[in-house]
Image 1 (cartoon, one colour):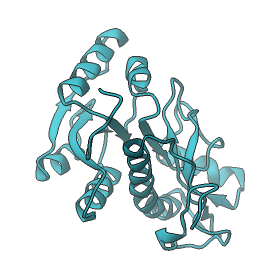
Image 2 (cartoon, helix red, strand yellow):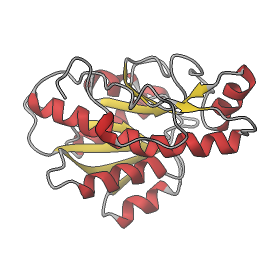
Image 3 (cartoon, helix red, strand yellow):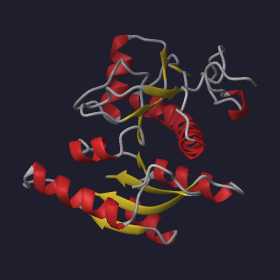
Image 4 (cartoon, one colour):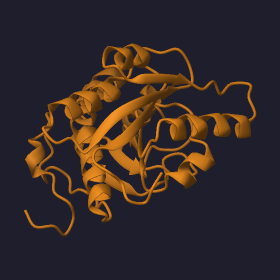
Length: 233
């Protein structure tokens, strides 16, 4: 991967499940006249619905099994797959494995993940999917929402790029809360991915994005309200 990136960047998405955030990234990319990235590879650790989404868009699929394998072997195969596809940036979209350290090191500052809670709360190993939303409800907090963060060597500890506050409503279950947060995820993640890619292409750091509004609403607000910190409107 060269220091000087060309337009558009070549992106890989890592997924382990249904791939709805993967689909949101694909749809956003397709809807831009000048998308700063093109998705060239899906990496999975198992058979999953995300593979069908990839094939429907002509995106190559690479299955890298993790269970029962030495971490070094998984790391070598993953790095090889990414380098073979000349990948510049990586987006995790429901990938349930720890990204190998050599991937994090080689693509430092270019690997994003989305987490269904407002980190640093409700993160870490084992905190995924319904487990997160159940923990939020049990805590009694009134605000949750997705976080887009850079990937580091530990689960959910990388620096935060963007968050979208979502209210916890009276009578919420883990399922109803998950659906509301997922709606925000589908809007926030593509915006954050685009923001990162444009920053990489411009040779500058990707500044954190401000939340969409100080007023927390059940439905996400227009994306135009998201602005980088310390930037002009």
